[in-house]
Length: 339
Ligand code: PEP
Ligand code: MN
Image (cartoon, rainbow, N blue to C red; front, side):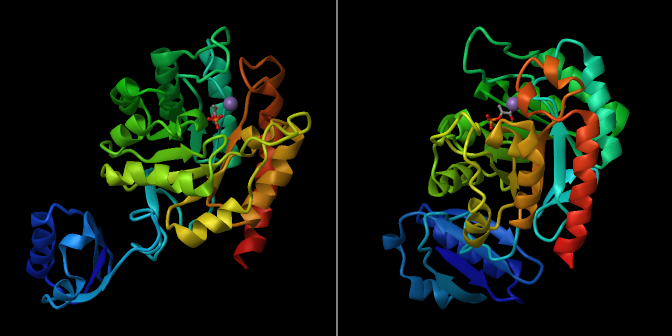
């Protein structure tokens, strides 16, 4: 249920409404906009008469939510969510697209990571991405540098001023990773790990939630709902392709239509990862452009100092020069899209 307060409603009136609902075991999420406050109340709506709620002082309107996305959906919040990632970088709404770039894995030597970080910064990226805990299909593949990788990322942030984003694979790792990272990433394999999502709801870090490899948009938004219901409103959705028929030519199917669909039903920022979506380096540029033309709020792109020798995902990684050229094209496209 959504309770829209009058623009002039005072704190006392807002609290009275919240207390009444809380006394009936509703959980309240406050959405304090510049003009008015909106309360999302989650609980058993049979326990309350909406008309009596609507007649309380300061209440403008009581709406029942039709969609299952009580917190991530537009019904509870019509304006776009803008998330402050740090360093003045904002994602969502009308802000310029945020570009996150970096290697699939943080590797044994820090030099390659630093080379990519300087190049990413120089080309205009705002976030350095790199995996220290790697979810690999085979247990025999490189599993990540773990805390050493986090330290390398922190050093790269120190040297370049870039924000850092890295994946959290398991709930017990959240505290450690949060000590280092500005942004936490949930990988495709964990989109349905509801315990992890609930635990991320208790952090205050922005979370990039990647779409499950065979998940519907509805399941995707409901996974975001878990994080938000836990108390963390800072969720960035990431479309990274879903399993298709033809892995010979593309690793996954990039669902570009998901972007306008998500923007219609949800206020959360949505970004695209063309690297994992396609698995092919030459497809990153056209799909990056298509993602931005489709309304994406940002991109996540794998960039490696020496893709042919990358520990993981080299075939879908750009080298620094290719990334620079992509960024030039993105900037040119941005000019067209905003006009
Ligand atoms: C990654 O970003 O490195 C990654 C493992 O992505 P995904 O979870 O989308 O496969
Ligand atoms: Mn990867």
